[in-house]
Length: 219
Image 1 (cartoon, rainbow, N blue to C red):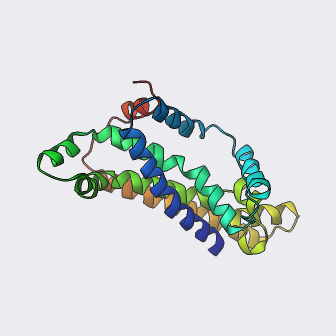
Image 2 (image 1 turned 135 degrees about the vertical axis):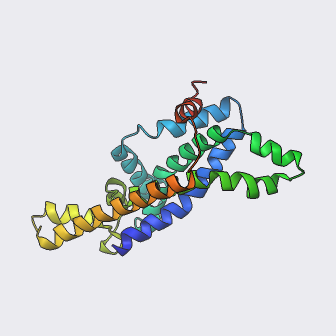
Image 3 (image 1 turned 120 degrees about the horizontal axis):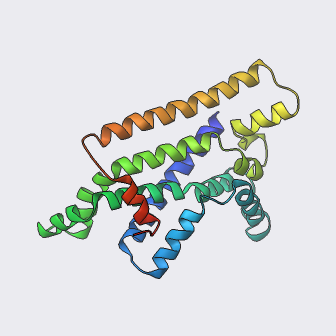
């Protein structure tokens, strides 16, 4: 359980800031190159996780052999896989709130850094929070990537333990309890995330369909 929570925390702390920065860059940078990067980010949602995990396995064993399989490889693989969540969610939030708040802050004399710190980031807080919850809960029950990139029992999370134990025919009350803990953890995190997001966005009315269409390049 400690290994699972550690991987979830590390992945969230790394993937969310990268995804937020990527979303800001793509939203502010218009052109064919930004549109191409945006398409690649959306395309990653349809790539099978097994293919991605095998690709990361060969990256760390053949291309960057200095990075040994284990916790570091697991974190890097999970960050690469989950960075799309904050990027897409924050982009949708940016499209929904528009540019008027930033323009108003600039008219009142705020610098670019002040606008980012005192206007944009507070407005993006619900999206950042939601993406962090999705990444954290997604890593808790991730199996394919961590199974391919783990090296020993010291860096094996609960999902791999459950599969390996059951596959070996050693299931029992302890395994059932561990599976229940995994399910409860995911449900609790998702529930807290939903309640927190609803509380932070109370009173807002944002057209999510328009935001997603804009991200996908339909408009």
